[in-house]
Length: 342
Image (cartoon, rainbow, N blue to C red):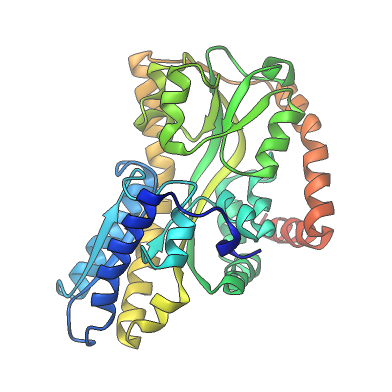
């Protein structure tokens, strides 16, 4: 499935794309010694782990190029949102994006949906051993099917459930409308627990919660806190049921247009920024949770072992369905890699 078979960008977005892409063409024809701007779009706040990692990338590139290469960052969906950032990358309207791994399944890379499986990973360290190893390399290499370049993984830790009541076992979800990313696996997870999945862009989530368009959602604590969701959700349940990670992606057209020396410098700056992002992810989530406890802005709940087992048992059909869809070999590769990491 090609991205170009996806629904067209709205007219306003097309105008944005044309304007920004035009600017990119001007920089693209510059000589190796001339100034260059890298346009990077993402959908979360600057003070989230992802936002902070990308700001570090900007600072490193500008420092190491002595200001010759600038990184223009458009955070919090200012330019493109969940539904159109990948298409904007394909069109050349931006040069880099940092989407959640859930974004790759709908555009033709269903193997990335492995990361959405509930209760697949025991720890962030297990995820990192996977993404830094052969499985992660194979996943990024596969993006070349659509002339995309995967430059690296990083994470924001584990997701937890929020609503206006505790969500600790499947019966608590019955009939709730739960906001999700556009992921078949996450949609099946919600259905398996008795909820109704509602796909919405991240930038629209808080408003949808406030107006009761949806009843709840799932997020790492840092996203919950920085988006002010505690003002519209009374309860946060620390289910740690799923992982939220990202990949930084560019287009082969842009990457191949960079001089070799610049390409190496940009990749090294990104590698360093992603290490930084992973280092602060846990700290930022812990900081946000401490702030919630301190302010009393939300009721914090910890599921018991028995309640977690109920959620895990109800999730088994979700794992089986994905294995049937992408091939059991993928799940076997992941499981073997995780066993080696322990």
